[in-house]
Image (cartoon, rainbow, N blue to C red):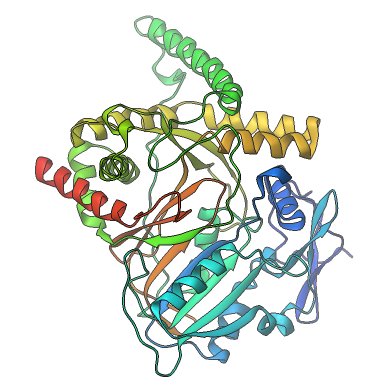
Length: 491
């Protein structure tokens, strides 16, 4: 008899007839599971140590989140919460293989949860910053499921002095690290929602950054002799957009590098310097961004990107950058998440798209208007789908070496990777303790800029080379100035 399906491993490429059965405390697959191309690419990075060519010296950085709490969780609460999220199969799986990779469930995973948890103490804010940087940079152990938890507390007699760009929060802190192989940012929010509860015990609510609905290319319900020419024109325009998207996708990895600025000195051959530090900026009110969004008819992401562009321009001026008087080419590689059949699945349903940031002397309203137009064009064009399609074909036909070189060529031409992740809208309880605040950080070949929301505020963090981008914390101050200026002009 066919065993019952019990939460099968979640991956688009897995054949429907594969099922799993309960054997003791954990789930064991009847045979290893195949991976989709994106997950396979990330699994290769986890197993070999990098997604990039070897000359770039880029390790496989984990996705790292730091949760600050009133008290450190005890072992029982930690294990209880970890058992809860083992409902996600990928958290109890190892990546197996050498050239081709598959998921394989660890049958006795519940007995091994404690081995994924470590505890550490720090005696000062500088020690905490050093510990956080080390957690961002240290690769995960690929010989077991790709996640771990570190509980950091203050040592007896510790002294504390906040420094610019520091976390601005004291331990206890719980750091959760996961491999990107497990899922993309939107998917991992589902893990957070499963692990947490609201203070009153109700399910967790997160900010919903929905995209505007795309207009129909061909609307059969409105066809008539009067508007049929308009429909045909729309179809022709969409076809031209598809052609443009193909050309853009093919040219970007081989086109010009971003302009040299005080924020990023893009070179012909970008390599990882071995230095990265997490820089945390003061939080800002989500309500202010929503007010601007309502007044301008744009999205939260539009406002954040416009204010960040203004902040980077002010950082150029602060550093005496001669390019500040011009409008330099500054772009971000932005993860674009595709709609998913089951929002609760862990999957890697995304690709990178190239988003220009409008720097240079400019009124903040004009900057926001330009940003909105570009973001609208990106969301309404087939560019992301074209890029994903080309990557799929290239990955299957040309192999891993070509794929890693293409990833490098694309990424190295950008000044940063920019992510915006929605978090819980109200305080939550994790590992049995109330979360006061949390931060996100991840290393990359180029600068990483992240925005995450929690309990009505948004926090901007940067992971940069401290020698190449000194005083990066001041970008947060400039961001707040741009947001205040925007609010003053509109509200």
